[in-house]
Length: 349
Image 1: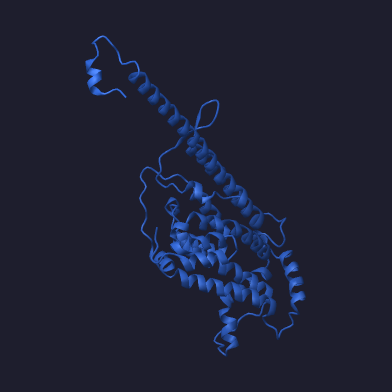
Image 2 (image 1 turned 90 degrees about the horizontal axis):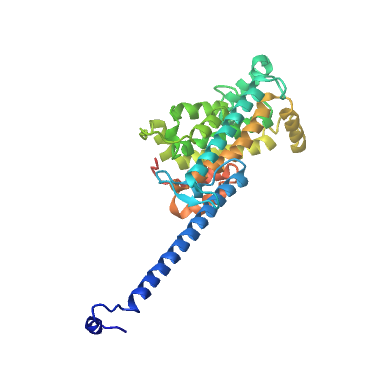
């Protein structure tokens, strides 16, 4: 090892032949190693992020995985995309976002045309609706959440409940009970401010027309945040729904469970037949009534939208229950009940 004293004793024109080249070589080797490490890390992150997007699309058919894109205020990450130049992760994200929005708007157009306007689906279109269908709608609305039938059953006859087939009542209230539980989820959605309208109005119309209004919301919430982004204050109804989310979840769960039992065994003293006969009626009902046929579409969309929205908002769930909700979100109705029950108290993100 060369000491300071021996170095200073050397002639002025002599040069330390072992120290300088060795240091330069070490520095160069360290820099080369760091560049290789950074390049490998960038390639790994690019592959990981794209893998998350691929998983999110293929697992649900329509939604982005929350693990790869919960970057509300992140800066663009530039990665090496192989031979030919660089690409941006945010650019890839933006392409997926635009694709999903296009799919959702097409789905909205098909939903309205096929279920409301065109005469090809089972039942009557809205412009040729029969009086029988109108009477059925009124009767189902009066039996909302089985309030009137249950009151009549315990001897309260202030208003008599219309007598309808239990299968039609069960299907109607099952979908409406499921729709009710979307309220806490919508009011705590971290993307909700990208929807410029009133969430109160949106959810109110969703209770009656279901996906006619939920599909556009799902598309609009994918918009980019504007330069003058100002989070809106939660409405009074929104505060009630979020603070009372466990109650909303329990009510929705009870209605969905009661709807199933009612459809199979309700009005047993009537002439509605056994369970096999009721299931046979259900098949006939779905193939002849536009309202019942539309409920099948609603259930299919809810099966997609429920895990999508919950997955995007797992940060609103109590920390100890995140893993449970993450897996239960794929189970229709059950996942939404779990989200409502495990929502952080007073959560208004």
